[in-house]
Length: 86
Image (cartoon, rainbow, N blue to C red):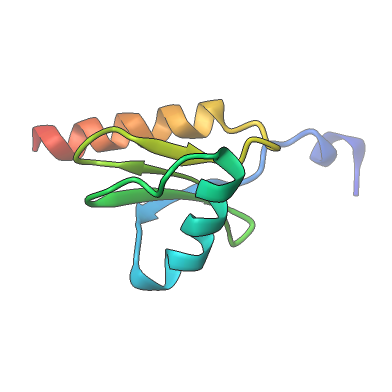
């Protein structure tokens, strides 16, 4: 891999949570020492791994504390605001 490619940010996919995300959401909640947020959830995925989730209804969130997820959580919050305002 070239040096230039090594510095690119990973692709982030934001999508609605689905039933099969349950184990990943529980893992995130455990890592973050918080409960899984209630209500309709959005998740952020990088490399086929859920790294953050946010409740559209309440704004509660969980994220992997061992990754840089602040920007990803901001994206989730931005998308949730758009869904609430539509």
